[in-house]
Amino acid sequence: MKLQRFNRLSAAEAERLLRPCVDIDSWIAALIAARPFSGVDAALATARQAALRWRPEEVAQALAQHPRIGERAQGAGREAAFSRREQSAVNAQDAALQQALLAANRRYEQQFERVFLIRAAGRDGQSILQELERRLHNDPQQEQRETAEQLREITLLRLKELLSDE
View (cartoon, rainbow, N blue to C red):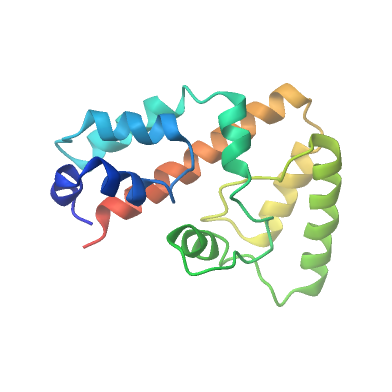
């Protein structure tokens, strides 16, 4: 979608467009209120600032929408399409990698009581597995910070894609 069109959407239409980026009401409201944007970079800067204010409970809510790394998101919605594209480099044909990711995901979920989140775009399955293993050594506070930062990266990539669509 062209930025000029986004700037003209009703608040309800803009909310529907933004929600697949991240399901955090305060972030969506901040972007809608800041319109019109002069350019995509200005929209991304506003989005980044709004994302820096996320509270842990907002991040936890947003995580509920994300599939495990190595699992394909189901459904026809834009969020599922984003997720499938972002995880496309995770080789589903590599059975050993899939087993390792599944086992590491389970350890992570037992330790941190939430799904492991990483910006998968631009990473292959092995590098994701290495990051997952590294983050298992984080303390809960450090992991909360890393999870929030990964969610910000995912959100900003999705927003940039949305605003760059023709």
